[in-house]
Length: 148
Image (tube, rainbow, N blue to C red):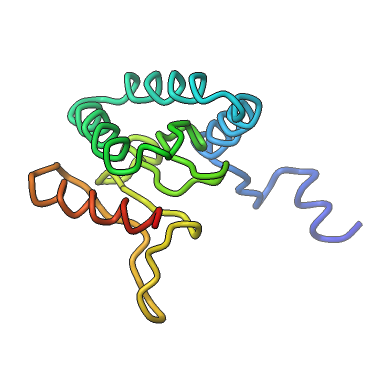
């Protein structure tokens, strides 16, 4: 028996997926089943936002308003259990609560389908501690550019 097989068989030295990662994969399987229905996607998004602790719940609700106003053609949905917005079935932008993977800040992220390219290097995610008018203006500009 090779070292890899014996290690897997005994469970020693195998780190596997964390509980958070397994939960995210289960969420993704459910999301794929509901992907064709915009109303179901939006309902799932609002359910996930409602589960967030404050102040992230308020931040996520405000982001939802900002993103849907800036890019009304994006479909609200969930993506690995996170609020997300898709174009042509592909996620463009998402919000990750700090609670999701026990991080110290929430994240506003953009996928590779977002049109944010600037030369040979550009940011695709942003740490969010709070939303002020300045951050909201930046987010509107980023979302509009992402879908352009």
